[in-house]
Image 1 (cartoon, rainbow, N blue to C red):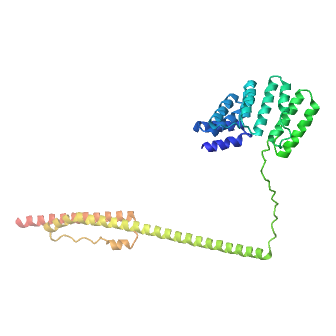
Image 2: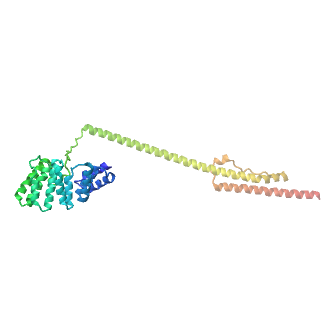
Image 3: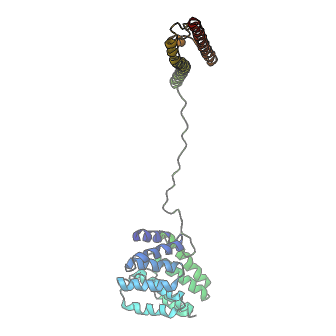
Amino acid sequence: MVAKHLVAAGGLLDLDPERAHEHAKAAMARAGRVAVVREALGIAAYYVEQYDEAVRELRTHRRISGSNDNIALIADAERGRGKPEKALELLKNSEELDLENETRTELVIVAAGAKSDLDDIAGARRLIEAEDFTQKPSGGLVRLMAAYAEVLRIDGETELADKYEELSRRTAKATGTLFGDEMPDLNAGVEIETVEEVEDEPESPEAEASEDVEGEAVDAETANDGVADAEAADAEAANESTSDADDASTEVDAASAEASDAVTETDASDAPEEADEETEAPAAAPKSKTHVSAKELKSVKVTDDEIEAELDEIIADAEAGSDSDAGSDSDATTAEADRDQ
């Protein structure tokens, strides 16, 4: 995670210094004792003009690592804090240090700016003129000539300042270095390729014939699917009709069974009465056969009204038989009385 924050800070430094500073602080919160993390935070703070933080972090990095690579940046941050004397002190102490040529050139440029802050334009010019302008072209030489042109312009030598500025721009172009007033190209290093549009080739007659055949096959398959769907729908409708018929038959069977049970119950209720009548009067009148079996009922369709009418008829016949038996008993009793007399 620390490495990711450091990579993000380095990539955003020229594009979005504020976000680069946030990433550097996030890395600092996780690895505060790592020298490279303190260096990244110091540089990011310098870019967002947080000079106190920049000086503190860069000095800490220098103490931990022993590196003097950022000494010019520390001196310029001291100028930003309003302490140009500190920058000149760093230049004076650097004489005892083994600095690389480019690092020393950067420190001289910062010291010349510190002299300008103290209104010592002549001293700033002497510092820069003491440097070697014939050194190998580099970014440090570009900035040295640009700083010298600025000092000359302040000192009133505009024509000479313009010549050094033009020389500085040419050197920057030759070395691929940004001049002071130039902005970084966000598309630098990005290759743009132009893709030509390829026209569709005309289809051959054979391909068209093949497409027609495929279309006919698709139509035939679609028609077959439609026929199959219709057959399936008809079969389903037939099954539903059969199911409805079975349900109706089941209902008729249930009604017939109920009628049969009702007749059976009626016969069972009349049986005791018939037994008593046979005991009292052996010559009882025979009953008419009105019972219909369940098998016969299933062969016809009988409604509830018809069943109720039949039950009423059976009950009426039973009551009529009972009245006839009672009349016979009365006649027998009268005959016996006459014989006794």
